[in-house]
Length: 237
Image 1 (tube, rainbow, N blue to C red):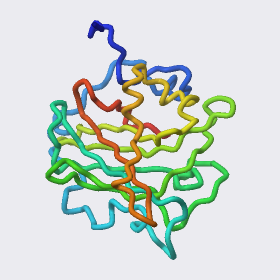
Image 2: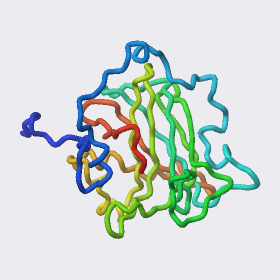
Image 3: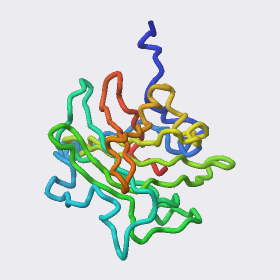
């Protein structure tokens, strides 16, 4: 039996030198406690009344003069607590690169085209069963200069808000069978193989919509043995 005290962590360490950005980002000083007034700020900044009907659909929520380019996908999953119970009414936000592997961000210098009909950002609330649905475009891989010939696997960032201003968890969803996962220090920085596997979505034909979009399932678990690995909230990649 594995000694729980020596079980590999599902979470990446703050400092993982192969991921070069972590050298500067990892805490080098003691953390500064937030003022009590901020800790007591209840609820997500964006309340439930701010969610618009198309916010969960990035193929529609930023259209200017047509549909965004790329392979349409549907991602569906459940948000669960440490006991496997559904978490209802939670705000989930997502962001990602477009089909060419470029973010709509001034610091993204990748020589790939922007898509005028796609921002790559989505927002949704979990329903009474803890389920969410994201409709989007499969993101492309992109270079990120972490090391020679470094390319990030296709991925979607997920942010989950709790009931308090300070309760926010950020993670990433990858796609099954991506050959770049074996070379990615962010993915490989998670010590536990089972933890890494929990970040890979599962193709689901039942979610796939005929002649329109492929479907994937991605559950997020907030605690316990099956916990989803999370990352620092200021993660850029």
